[in-house]
Length: 354
Ligand SMILES: *[C@@H]1O[C@H](CO)[C@@H](O)[C@H](O)[C@H]1NC(C)=O
Ligand SMILES: *[C@@H]1O[C@H](CO)[C@@H](O)[C@H](O)[C@H]1NC(C)=O
Image (cartoon, rainbow, N blue to C red):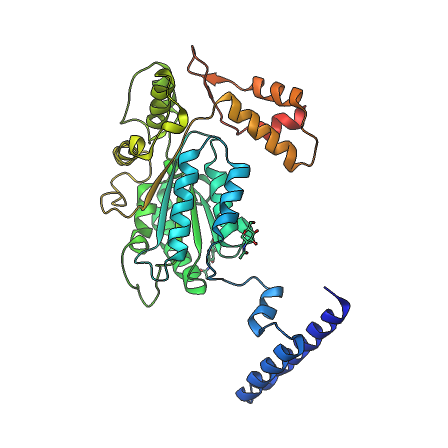
């Protein structure tokens, strides 16, 4: 900022500070001081001024083109996830009067971009992203590890969500490792996801809930041995199976449509007692708005991840290194070797090594 601008902002702040003290005795002077402070800085309102120094809960509409750009630059091989996330978030944020909070359920293989997408979503909703006071990340094995403490977790989670949504209606809650979450814990938040106008004076309708990683490794080996399986996985290998069917039929990956996956996804999750949603009533009551599938990543996508990581580190893109890192990954199924076992997950550490 220009030095003269800084001077005026400082002057305005001093005025506001004085006004706060004065306001304790005489409320009118606060209004006058705010007016004066705004006049001094020319264009800044009190709120703008305040929000320069502290993080504010904002209700601003989403910048859809910025979100789209972020997704295009960082997320690879996920045409469906990109499409659904864009539609879900812009639709919800443009709705002045949503009837329920937005609930997204992200499914798929390790390293396919679920965490990345939740991070990008968080940053586009609150500029500080995962570091924001209005974005809350819960990791099952970290926050809710002990089965015998479920009652405690339920109370805690309800208190936290109520407290945070009271403070900021557009709070974002991300639940990672849903496959490791005890169903009882998720039951505790069910009322908040429903179509209530308010609960005990708090409205949850502008909040966003994102659930990640409904998948277990069992599904992986099932696909490898070629046995179709809808019960023992949480959607992960149904997605892989569909992708593989397309590949084997010589059809384009981008030709996979939501309708090829969505019914299978919700049924798979519902039937899986390790998914954390099992019989929890989230699905049977249709409280999940969008199921978002993440396809397994191919060799070419891994290369894109390596290039993006190099770019993010500010280094020149060296195609030899790109190829070497991608070739170090392991691929499945055993014969065709199409999909990366860990998606792009270990790309960063492998790049450190090179
Ligand atoms: C939205 O994002 C685009 C791309 O980042 C940017 O050029 C544009 O200025 C933004 N619009 C607003 C209103 O912030
Ligand atoms: C908001 O949630 C966090 C956990 O992410 C918790 O520590 C904090 O106490 C909550 N705030 C309120 C006001 O409940």
